[in-house]
Length: 469
Image 1 (tube, one colour):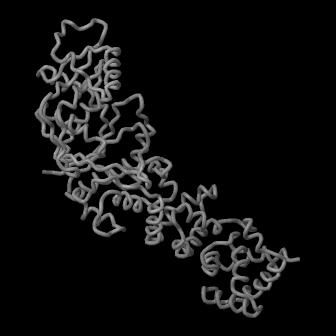
Image 2 (cartoon, rainbow, N blue to C red):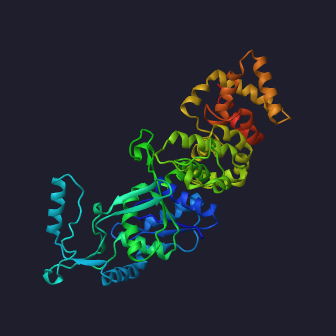
C-alpha cells in the first residue's frame, strides 16, 4: 500500500501553528514511507474563504519547506461530484429529503438546551411520506445514519474509539440550495485522492465516526485515522494569541528560522528519546505515529526562541546573510551594497552567539551600514564626555600608526593604551564601542573594528575626536 496523506486547511483564516504542525506530521509520515503528501484547500464555506488566506497557506508551507505532491486540490471544484454522490445515496435509500423549517430546527435546539444535551435532529422526516412536504420549503438531503450499535475507529494515536450510533444524528449532505456540506465533501475527496492516512487534530474525532459511516454507506474503505492532541498554552489553557500563538507568517517576520520552527513543532507532542535538536533527515527517518503522545502539547514561546538561537549559531554564514538581507533592506529603507555585506560577513561569527532571532540579529548589525557621523543612542552618548573625547583623540593617533590591523594587533594596542593611562580596559573599550557603533552593546570591539575596516573605523573615531574642546 502506498502511503498517501493530506493536509486539508480551510482558508477562512491564516495558517497557525496548530495547522502547521498537522501539515508537518502528514509530510513526515508520507516521506518516512516514501509516499505522497497532498494539499487540499477545503473552501466549501465560500462566504468566509478568502484568497489572502489561501495565499497565506501556500506561503506558510513554502516557508516551512513542506512541498506537496501534485497540484493543490480546491474542494469547491468538486461540488458537482459531491452532489451526485448525495443523490446516489438518496436513490439507494441511504439518504432522504428533509423539509424541516427553520422554526422547527430552532425548537429542537431550544428543547435540547432545556434538557441539557447536545442538539440532535430528531429524524422526523426519515420515514415520513414526502407527499406531506410543505410546498414553500426547499428540502435538504440527510444521511440515513445507523441508529443502533456503535461505530469503532481504530485510531493510530488514540487507540480504539467507540461511538454509540444513537449519539449521532442524520447529518445534512446537501443543503437546500443544492450545495454539498463539508462532511460529504471530505469523504468524497479523501476517497478520490486515495488518502490512506488522515492525520489531523483530535477535535475531529466525532467527525471521524460520522465520516466512517458515510464511507461504508458508499461501499468505500475509510482511511486510517490518526487524531493528534491539540496544542495548549504554557498554562494549559486553550492556545491563543496571548500565549504567542500567531500566524506562521508572523514567526518568519520575527526572524524565526524555518528549520527551528519545524524542529519545535515536531517536538510538540512527538518525541524521540531525549533528542531536542533534530535535523530534517533525522525527522524523516524517525517519525512514527506511535511516538505521538495522547495529552495536549504545551506551546512555550521562550523554548521556541531558545531553539531558534541554537539554529542560528549552527547555521552557515552564507545562508544567514541571504536571510538577513531583506530584513536589513527594510530597516535601512534600501538594500545594502556589496561592501556593506562584506562587513556583515566578517562580523557574523561575533553576532551569532548573542542572537535569538534574525530580526534582532539584523538590528544588532545595523551599525555596520550607517553613514557617518553616527547618531549615538542615549546610553552611548553619556559615555562620550569631554574627558573621553580627549582619550579617543589620543587613541586615534596611535591607531593611525598601527600597521597590524588584526584582532591581535588591535587588542594589543588598546590594552597597552589603557595600561599606559592607568585605566581598566572597560574605561577605554566602552567609549571606543560607542564611537564605533553608537551603542553600548556589540560583539567584541576588535571584531567590530576589523569588520568596519581601517578607513571606516578611523573615520568614525575621528568624528568623535574632532569634537574635542
